[in-house]
Image (cartoon, rainbow over all chains, first blue to last red; front, side, top):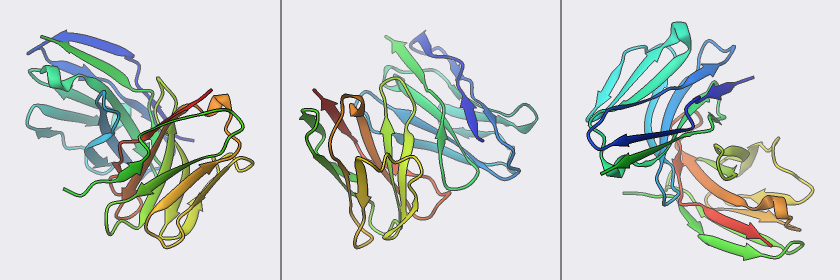
Length: 112
Length: 113
């Protein structure tokens, strides 16, 4: 069985602060994919990143960066210099096959 | 930029009534998914199609829910009869193939009264 845990329910920061979202997963599969999605207040889930289990390189995309550590089964996400537009619910998801298992999400509120 | 289309965006219905949702995936995407998202939770897969065939409907309450993708393009999800507990956001997603990133539509927010 697959399980994704996002222990932080809500995070509130002031604009320009960095914010790190934790994601811990459980799976018995050796090959799998990890994802992050953003859900703004409009409701649409926006794809951010996909990472396969064989690629532990960290990735940076603009103000976003991801830290994948297979040894601790974690795939954390950092927003640098947060902006009000970053306010949303962020979901981590795991897929060893075709099925996405989502975490419960972390609500990020960025205050001006 | 290609998008997944869903309609309606909002639906209010009384319990025991029938309700249907429509989804048009990104052109060329063979895999289509229907998810249900209860407020405060992550989405849960209801059904997955590969072209016109159902790949996984293990979480679909088949006594009241049905889904079809007759021509392997757009899809319809139906609930009959609706129950109060069905109030949720229903999301459609598509991907080129399984395991590729899924692109989501805006969702249909269903309220059953």
